[in-house]
Length: 298
Picture 1: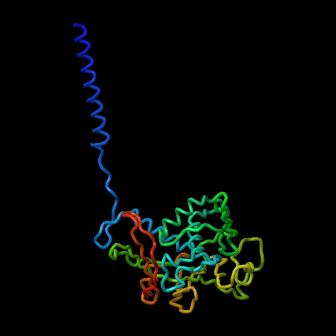
Picture 2: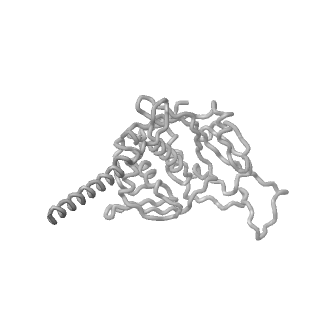
Picture 3: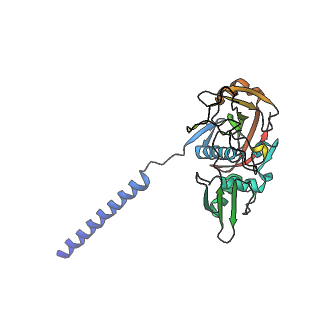
């Protein structure tokens, strides 16, 4: 009799354990709400927002890396009418892949695997990754150590945002076939520094003053003249707008507002006189798009 009670007790216990296990499975794997991918619509099609963020990050990275006046690749992105990923200068491609990891410190070491991954995320299979030491200019030392598979960088001077350079403004984002195409207005900005007169010069004192062109520090003779565009002092309230770095075509001279350039206003007023470039990104996966080309279409 006691054996029957024991058997019944064990059976009830097993049933309870199975029910409890079933509840846990249902709670964890069945009743949990499935996360939907965050999407946005472009040209009537749903696109994973992660893909769009990566595209935007790549374009911003290009603009930052190729907008450094101390670099040999200053203005590289807009130098030609067409630039395809498979025609990219290998050193320029490696430079932008390393630039992504350069922090606000003047020196550091980066694993080669990180640079290779950056390279792949930008250029995919259109360009082959070849690690090496590259010459970026006198302001940079970017060295590759094959034995440890690491890159070391040393930047003599961290460039601020007050130098002459390219500024872009998105015009449209569309899907053409399976490609994401972004069109941008591109302008080259040079801040105007005021020339002091004899009557406006102040006598030397111990207080900190804005440098004029006459008393500004001498330019680094190692930096090519054409890239010596930095403004040592704060902008005085004006900027010249050109179509490109060669400054052959002046679009306008505009006033700054509180030291800030109103790009929207410039594009609104002078858009028809500015260059338009088209970025094309091709899908590698449903959520990953790779840089394919940049073309000047106007």
